[in-house]
Image 1: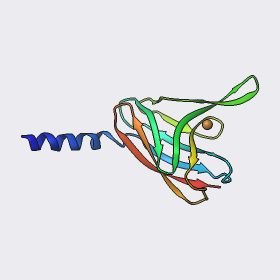
Image 2: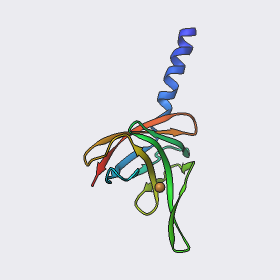
Image 3: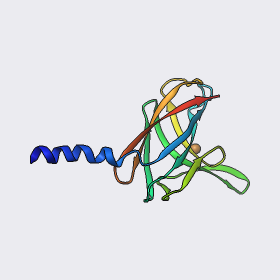
Image 4: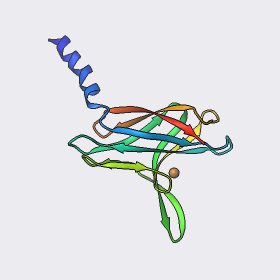
Amino acid sequence: MQRLILALLLVVPIAAQADLEISDAWINNLPASVPVRAGYLTLHNPTQQAVTIVGATSAGFAGVEIHRSVSQDGMLRMEAVPKLHIEAGATVRLAPGGLHLMMKQPAQPTSPGELYRITFEYADGSRQSLQIEVRK
Ligand SMILES: [Cu+2]
């Protein structure tokens, strides 16, 4: 019985992850002197339930946040989006001029063609990893 419970504990988080369909994931390449990179991707939620991203990490960067670019009094600035909701059936695009991943302090200079792994953490505690490609 104990073994069965352990097996269920191991299986459940795996079944809960990979909720979102992620496509067109890329990072804009910048010179090594620039301490951040912007990441873009398309998130589609094919499930019957809303999904909320509450965190993101990448081994190649000191930190990853979701940001939104907003225009205020003619100035473009960015604000953090601590929780990104994706409604059931909805598609959310992170694209230049709007939502983006703010990837801070790359451990090494980036160059086009490199792949980085990003892991999203969802409100239910599950995680999903994806690969994101550095583009010019
Ligand atoms: Cu930003």
